[in-house]
Image (cartoon, rainbow, N blue to C red; front, side):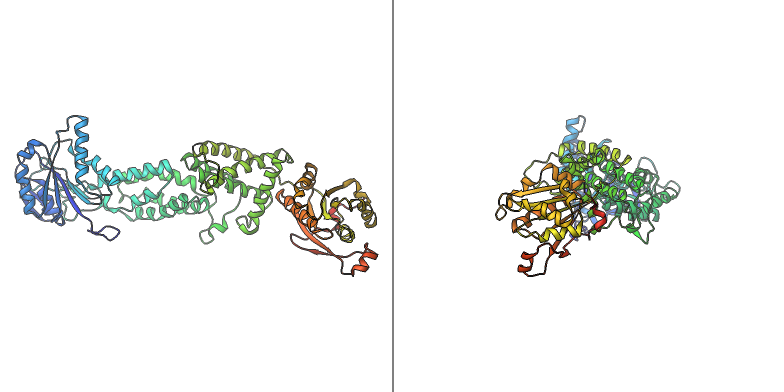
Length: 592
């Protein structure tokens, strides 16, 4: 016999001997064996491959001094190597535990075990059962067969009852219970893949008058179909993939419905699989897409968002906080996409979802700076807290702060409630009005003049030095923008040549409010010192973090330096550097 890895399994035969034995004729597979000991019949008729294996014979002191020696001799003639395991009578809990210890110590790791439970004390089969459960888990043993010869129920020849299916049903129960509690169906998939718990026994007399063959018929195609559909669902759920899980859940539900109508699957197996159906119903998408289109055809809707939060709750109920947090995070991103009118390409990471995440990050920034309205403030606070909690797990705890995994479930439940409350009245995307121009003013005013004429902003923020701030009114007058004097903010640098670190001091509350109240921020990079250009770059980054559409431009004058010095107020050229093209002069509200 070979293990799945290809290595040869060691075989071990476990049996017992009682005080009262009598010669019987045992029959299996058309062959007969006459002996006083049922384990000998098992070794000769049912498991001839045991030849050369150890035979662990459980015996009390009285049985060891009585029938054991004769049994041992017959086992040797059958090609086995008998070894007595002396155990107490098992009248107390301590003695039963001692029996378990002795048997478990005798079986080696990774062995393939065959058990005969015919002889011995009446409670011994229960000891066998518990020992096998423990050894399967702790020692990695493989149960090849559990057999019983009912000599007291029928007249000779005595048939064989294969009880292996009962043990495998116990393992199936363990898989069902684990799946129910943890939401991990991979163990159940493995259990359903083991055909041995419904294996037919060749040569039995099942169906004949007085026959006692296997308790269960062979596995039918319906159960195989369920097993095949369960695998993708189990792996998708374990990986935290709600859409993939929702898609594969639909065909599994159909197979489960078919399974209930099939009589070729044992009733106890159908009962074991029944709890699976309610779980799969929770996972299945409200509107399953056509199979040929797959995930691309999943429609973004309010119902889908509610379904995703239900699946997040499913993870949280089973103690899987990281998966629940991840699903809630992506649900919020999807909710923003839906609120912004997106739908067709709502799964596109390149632009759609990245823009939605930027909007959520902006809401979080506005929340921290107390710049958001009530709805956006709730959204920003939730996104900030949810993201920080989720990131604790996304980085596997590799950060200086300790991750409190014990409180994660409670925090996840709070986030889930907040998500559901927010979904009832999801805030509209924050949008400002007008255009804000951010530009430097160096010793030559031409670049600022060109940017003002081209952009016609609603507000103006100018990065200046002590030497240049006095020229701003002149530039406004020559550009015909004197109305901006009341909507002007001067950002003065003490050292326009080395003051790179002064930028943080320029970002005051008023400038933040200007950013969030604007529909668009245009940043002109030219016309100042290197430090000034660095500052306006940082200001553009700040505006972007707040979710404001930001465009960088350059104002260019191709005339000679002498011509620019003689007459700086000549309209130059605007070059778009990144972002979307400005909406046009009318969008800026530039009129007086």
